Length: 167
Image (tube, rainbow, N blue to C red; front, side):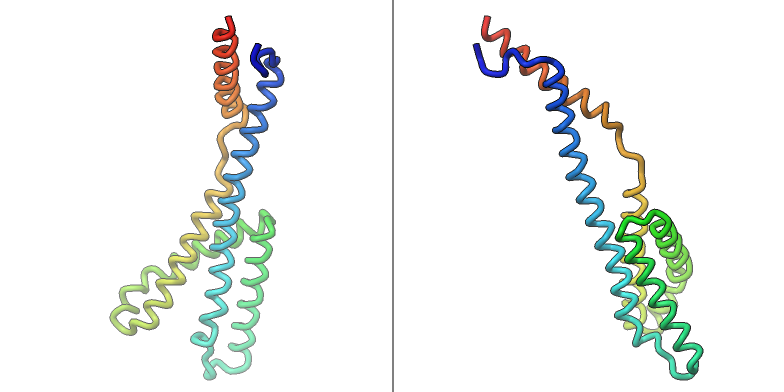
């Protein structure tokens, strides 16, 4: 008699459930990493382009407004990375709103300055990536029981073939 041929159906389903959970955990980890990298990329790029946005003619109030907006966007990004749902929703909304504002101006920027165009293009790509990654991280996942049933079927069919070989 082969080892494991007398396994009960409950232990087979438990093993299939554990396998399904491990696959789901790995998939969630990868999507969370992608989401976090895009969110941190948007925040980092926002800080990198701050010197280009500084305009001394705005005065103290303009510089203060720029500093406050950078601090708030960085705090919102950190909160989104820490899996605070409302922060993720707000960050997604602001990325989408920013894309709606920046993308139509790209052809004009291309004609006027390649440097400004490249900065805006990088910002758009990062924000679009963050928007998609945050959207996919909130998308409903396939039901766990469906994956478990398929894995259980494979394990049960292998066990039954072992029993048939034994006879």
